Structure formats: structure tokens, C-alpha cells
Image 1: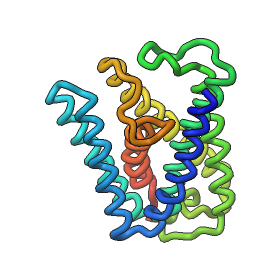
Image 2 (image 1 turned 90 degrees about the vertical axis):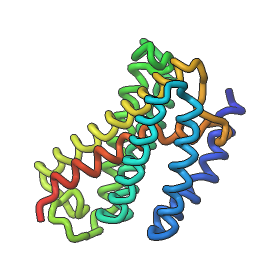
Image 3 (image 1 turned 135 degrees about the horizontal axis):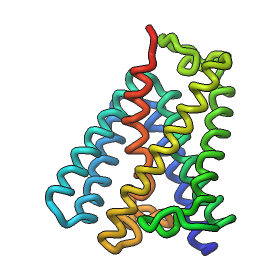
Length: 226
């Protein structure tokens, strides 16, 4: 158990700076990063499923998700993109820590390791981290006239919007995790791959993110007031 945790930490320490660099640089670097990630995750999805239609639907969804990731980074900027990624990562970490610590009743048969404690932990950590991030970035201004996106000091109504937004993104991220877990369970495999020591496959790590990004982009575009 400890060895697996050590592997997860070491892999994360390597991956996080590399990922941050490509997202921050944008332009060609970010596009290259998206292309590589798309092909690796698509390969894992193809290996995961036997039915051609499921393979096609999954690859189509991944393509759209990565396209929305490109649009989100391009149109709403680095810090908004990072904010969505942060919520998804904290959702995953919160579920893992609370689930392992408190255990308790299982959430669903789709993923036997998921618990109600993990569900609550995912919400708690993502909300705490998201609010701290916005507070830290409150001097960041871009040409979108909505307090939350501007990271300006926000009033009660905007605070509610921000709280609900983080909550929903966290929920969508968890749904993505369960969807991939469902297909892994059908295929009777633990991980989508072995490319990331301690984590499994790439798709194991971004399953929540590929669901959260399209939702976040569409939601924020609809919420923007110019």
C-alpha cells in the first residue's frame, strides 16, 4: 500500500510541472500536449472496449472534450483553465483521502472502492481549494464582465454562483470517473493502462477532467455577460 502511494506521489511530482508548463505556454506547446494526450487516452479507450460502436462513441467524445479544452484555454485563458483542472484534481484527491480514511458504505456497485465518505470528501476539498484559488487570484482581470471569471472581489450573489459552479464541476468530474469505472468493470480490468506508475493509465487520471471541461466551457460561455 505504501509503495503504491509513494509511486503515486513521485509520478505526480514529475507530471504536475510538465503539465503546468504546457498549459501555461499555450499556443503550439499546448496543442502538442493535447494531441499527445488525446492519442494516448484514445488508445487506452480502444484497448478497454471490445464493441466497435462503444469505441467510436468514446473516441468521438474524447475528441470533443480535447477540442473544448483548446477553446477553454484559448478563449478564457490560462487561469480559468487551471481553475477547472484544479477542481477536478481536488475532487479526485478528496475522494481518495476521505474514502481511504473513513471508508463506510459503498456508493455504487459500478466502482466498489467509491464510498459516500469519498463523495463528501470530493466536494469538501474541491470547494475549499476552489475558493482559495479564486481568493488568491482576485487581482486577475480579463475582458469578461462577470465577477467570478474576473476573479474580482465578489458579492453574495457571485459567491453563490461560484460555490454552485465548483460543486457542479466536482459532481460532473465524479460522474466521469464512474463512467470509466463502469467500462473497466465490464472489461474486468483494474486500470486503463500502465503508463503512469502508481496511477495506472492516463485515462484513469483524466477521466473526470474530460467530462468536467466540456461542461465548464459551455456553462461559462452561457453565463458570460459582455
